[in-house]
Image 1: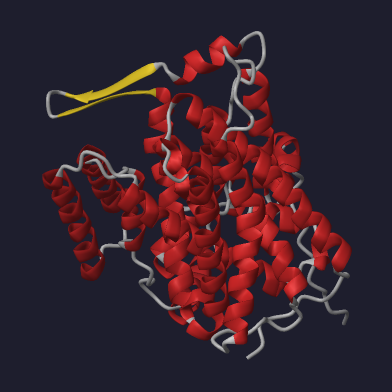
Image 2: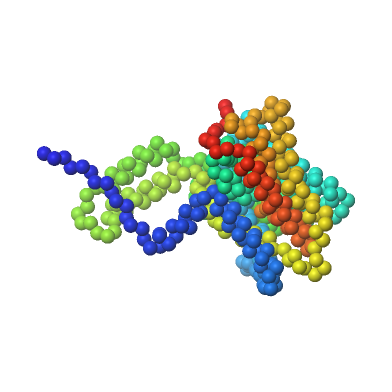
Length: 454
C-alpha cells in the first residue's frame, strides 16, 4: 500500500497592493534607508530654500498652530516649534528606549565591553566642544559650543552599512554604542545648559507624573495607553517648565517596562494548546473563521503581547515612524538655509568654522585619542578584528552630527547665527562622512563578522 506524502503548502499569491508596496518594504529594511531618506530631505530643504519659491518654505514653517482644551490647556506655536518640541520628543523617546535597552541587555551592560565606547564618546564630545569654544571665546556665539558634540546615528550607521562586509559586526556595535552614549550626553547638555526661564513648579509637576509612571511600572501596568497619556501630560508640564520638552521623551522611556508578562517556554506551551483548539474539525467551512477558531486566534494574539517586553514592542513600533517620518520632517523644516539672503552670509565667520572643524577634526581626533588612551591604560580593549584604522574611520563617521547638531543649533541661535551654524553642520558632516567612508573602504578588506573578544 502506497503511503501518502504530505503536500507542501503553497503560499498564497501576493495581492495587488502587496506587489505595489514590495519594493518600498525591501528598501525600508536596508540599514542605509533612513540615512538615504534623511539626505534626500536635506537636499530638498536646501533646494527649496534657495529656489524662486523660497518664501513658501519659510512661510510654511512659521505658520502658527494652536491646540486648546478650554482654558486649562493652551499651546500656540509656529509649525517649526511643533516639530522641534513635539515630534522630536518622540525621537528622544525612541533614543531613551535604545539607551535603556543597551544599559540592560546590550553592549553597555558590561563595563569591560562598554568602556571603549564610553571613552570614545566622551572624547568625541569634549574635543569638538573645545575647538568651537577656542574659536568663539569671548563672543556671544560661544553659546553654540554644544552643537558639534553629537553623532547622527541614522546617518553614521547608514554610511557604515554601505561598506558591507568591510565593516565587521564589532565595528557596528562600537559605533552604535558610541552614538547612543553621544545622544545621552546631548540630552544632558540640552537639559543643563540650554534651559531658560526655569519654572520650578511645572518641572515638579512633570517629575511627579514621571514618578507615577515609574510606580505604574512597578505595579505591573503593561498596556501602552496609560504610559502614552501620562507621557503627554509630562511633556506638557516639561514644555511649560522651561526645560526643553524633548527631555520628557527620554525620561518617559526610562519608565517603560522592560520585562514581559510570561516567559518564552510558557508562551510556546500556550500557543500549542490554542493551535490544537484552532485545528479542531468544524461542521462547515466558510470564508470566515468559526467562533472557536476566532477565540483561539484572539488567545494567541493575547499571549503574543504578553511574551513581548513593552519596551521592545514600542521600540519596534516607533522605529520606522521615527526614521522615515519624524527625522526627515525635522530635516526638511530645519536644514534649509537661504544662501542668497540680503547682505549674504559671511562664510569666514567663526561660527561656521567652529562647528565645521569641531565635526571634521574634533570628532575623529577626540574619538581616536580617547580610545587609544583607554586601551593604553588597560581600562578597555579593542574588539577582535578591529584596529585603530577602523577607529579613525569611525571617528570621521562620528563627525556626521546632523540631526542632533541641528537641534542644538536651534536652541542656541536665531537668525543669521543659526544659518551660519547650519552651514557649518552641513559642510562639516558631509566632508567627515566622505572621508570616513573612503578611509574604511581603502584601508579594510571584506572579512567575516567577528564578535568582541572575551
